[in-house]
Length: 267
Image (cartoon, rainbow, N blue to C red; front, side):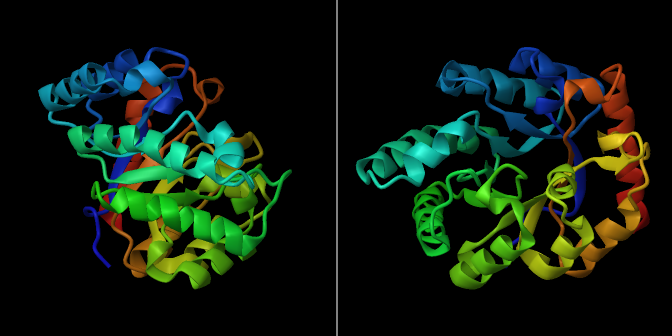
């Protein structure tokens, strides 16, 4: 299976929401973050001139974008997983704007939430709809990766394993540590079971202080977790993804980025 790059630390612009995207990206790369995931927050941020601005910010600092996260996750249950088939074509056509933006930014991974657990559809229908989107993304050299999300149908390891078996090489995954914890799943077990189909990681720590902490502020054995991934061939991005309430100053994001880099370098 083709890999994107060596295992590398990074930070998501989502950590600084609701600051404007261009400001968030500038702040991160100005502090020395060389690898980013970009969260597109609204439709106007898909315009070519805006994407070119983001690309220039990255290039000016020798930084890169490995993945894009769409703001449209809440609409996916209605647009991709309803019984009204015409919506499927519309959402895929719309997502092509994201794929085009990713081509400019050099990003390869499209982070996908999917259907909500409150309105489940049969597994096979879910997998087939995902495959349609994944096929459309291939034309742009983009990989659609299913994220485990506690409020979504993708919350359980059982579901993700079934998806992996049903779709074969079409199934690729984003492993989000905090979302696994919130769903009552063990991130390390997910890593073991899904193996090299995990191509992207959303990193956070957890423990007595909370379920979404800066790396090192909880009790999660990050080194062991990343070793499990590495042993299965993972060499993608380990992206710090927190909420604005989970840290005090944005300088902590750069410090944590370097902390995760140190862990990776010791593996």
